[in-house]
Length: 520
Image (cartoon, rainbow, N blue to C red; front, side):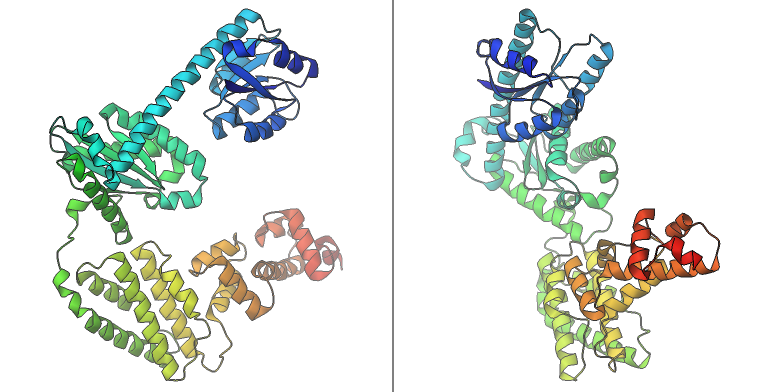
């Protein structure tokens, strides 16, 4: 039996539909009734029905609004609309909302059987498709892991074929948007696009895995245009979230000549997309283009490389004490990473390890000299290195870290001063009229929100947002005293998004409202 819930604001109608129609004969069981769309959504969360029969005109949330919400959040649920109004506009909007049937009140038995018999058939077809897809997904999962390969010998071993794995990684995107809905949409687009090439797909973790098969060798020249077409399709259908190339990256393994080698192509694809860490511009990275084995013989040079850079950076930092911190560190950082890249094309883990080692040695040497670094929390610093997911960001972060150390060295007579707090204050004073949030300033300083919030509160005795509001109110006081601007205009000028919030904050800071203050 398929589960259905009935939604209607008139109790006698929903009771009649629930109890006097032969639901079992068409393969359905009524598992709940609701009197409006909001109540229906709660019921849907509990029961997860296969279908919903809903009235159009209801208070709180209409049937069409409910249908749109179901289409967005529960696209697998079928919706049938019931209306007392033979109005084509309702039918049009219902179709746009993805409904599977449109019935008029009073519902006739023939209409009931026609609509729900077809709906039950559609649900059965969906189940068959799901089973086929599930079997294909399990097989693809075994192939990329190299598990249970013998059971697929008959399926893949009949013909000589070429295989190639591509991985579309959406790790960064899923940090920014609701994972379930966007994942579902990407899966639908991927199935529609790749099915035309008879290509298998699987969502695994935060990545879409694409397995291409062909009787001929699958070359880069053959596969690359298709990947770009699919990326264009994602951008066309999903808008701004795919405009930024950093939101996703594609890694492509080398061709495999047997199905037993698919796992090798998959591992190469994983390795290839990890190279996004080193690239600022590439979206699609082929394993064949990487110099994987190029300079492995030079790994022995790493200790000398590290010692040389530690000495150079330490000397530069000590010089910054004499020049009051006005030294540039960008070139030193670039040279550090460029050299490390040349030593065997170090894996990401070793790049991070080198960066950690550099920081630890520098901190140890300054401690030996009796120099204090109040802005540097070693545990936080080392943890941050392993959270940054691109070489470009790591360079920026290390440059700022060296500038922070330089600040601390330059202000040894003010051992309690934290440079992050001063930088945040300077930013607020220069940009109070712009939108400033705790998240924005933390990102700008390469710090966790919680960590920055804690050090700011410890240093100043107040929350960061309270400090921002304090600065804005101080600027507003000057404008109220010295200009004739309207209070709402002043509210906008000093960066408040809401006039009522401005009034509230101003009164908290000064004891009076802006209107009373101006009259004093």
